[in-house]
Length: 195
Ligand SMILES: NC(=O)c1ccc[n+]([C@@H]2O[C@H](COP(=O)([O-])OP(=O)(O)OC[C@H]3O[C@@H](n4cnc5c(N)ncnc54)[C@H](OP(=O)(O)O)[C@@H]3O)[C@@H](O)[C@H]2O)c1
Image (cartoon, rainbow, N blue to C red):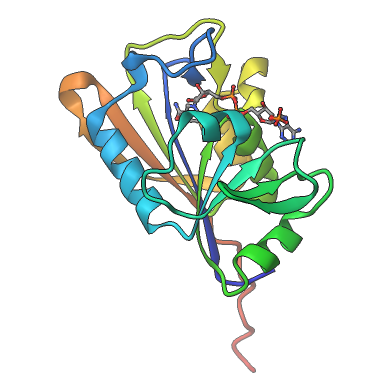
């Protein structure tokens, strides 16, 4: 796999860690212009934007960035007119990265839940988790499936090696805050002083 890959996730959630309502759609209460602007900028700068099929269909590719669409209908990894399509059961991420980003680059992971869960296992280098305080979406789609078992999104990120690095009051008037999570550095054993 290329060494210099940076994989960052982006989501805006409700107080109960949901990315969409019970109807499967992102409600207006989770739409925030400041969060949207940063998310769009991240997509513009990305070398590859990853979505599960439904999110891909719902988000027009306005920046015309290379996309990777996760779907059980893909024949492994295949190039279609709207981007690369990938079924992780048939082709590994290592194979995908070597083919699509042979020299590395920035990967922006935009969800939904299937893709966020998948990249927890592959390994995020960072995650930008925005929250619209005061919004609850009972019966909605959670950012990670573990949230359905009462594990908070913050705990899920910690369990997968990320640490809270920054809190940004994105839009205090509307109660929207962003938390930036980064991969915790792995412990390096110290070199003995006599060598
Ligand atoms: N608030 C946020 O930050 C945020 C972020 C992302 C999305 N959203 C919203 O969340 C909603 C969509 O989320 P969602 O979770 O319902 O859908 P999704 O994760 O975007 O897409 C679901 C699709 O993933 C594919 N899939 C499912 N299991 C799979 C597997 N094991 N391997 C490969 N592919 C698999 C299926 O496509 P196939 O049938 O083709 O296999 C399925 O239809 C939308 O309303 C979207 O706008 C919000």
